[in-house]
Length: 163
Image 1 (cartoon, rainbow, N blue to C red):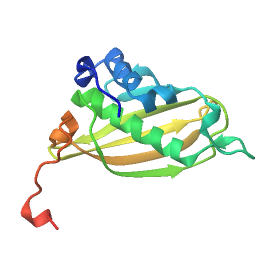
Image 2: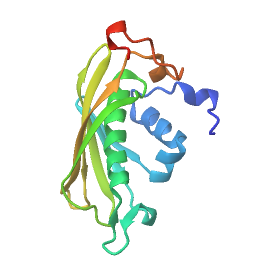
Image 3: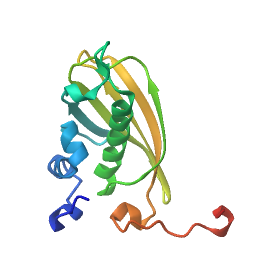
């Protein structure tokens, strides 16, 4: 288990430096090498360097679909983090794969669609080195829980939603 340092628990995620610090603090994100390349009112931009370990099909030399879906999820979460000041857990994610990701650097963008009291929505796109769309996705993310703030516990659901 990775032990969090106290200064990592609540970085200021409302600017590029804070968002990058959070990404670099996660072993998986650090391994991916994600770099925040831009931040504006509509969303957040990323650069993704290529790693040979991303290959899913060694005969075609293209990225594994799990890497692609992970990037779409991360871009959407980070767009929300830039607005909310903290990452939030994924409730549902849909990813559409448009083309194979060649063994080259990629870029991406995440944008907030709606922020609600319980659930928020965000979308993301991943592009190849020529700017062609590799994948796009849209997700729902939980915003009302202590889980989003690091307690690890989800709040009780209303009795109508319990099973």
